Length: 111
Image 1 (cartoon, rainbow, N blue to C red):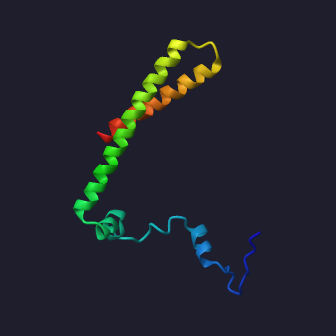
Image 2: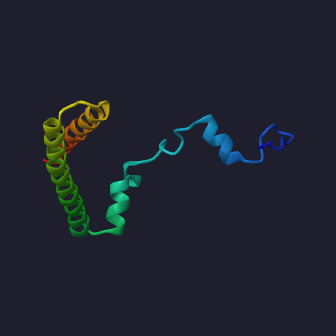
Image 3: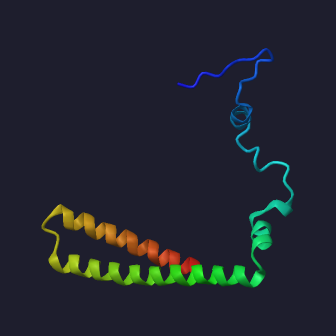
């Protein structure tokens, strides 16, 4: 169990912990726009490298979304063709419909 050692000025031994509990947003205060993540990324990568990585991530996520749309469409078709004699078929169909919906929404987001 954590027991802080209290000093004479009534502060704990872990001042960083006290600072975090006093103000959880202290990391974002008093920072200029120069300390943003994009500025940090531009300091590490050139603009061309950043855009290449960005486009690669978008194309990869779109490929995964397309696979999810096809797979969930097939799953929904199979479950509908089997019918719904058991509750597990209903649950799995609902799961496939939900996943299909998310894949379509992410595809729309990528566009």
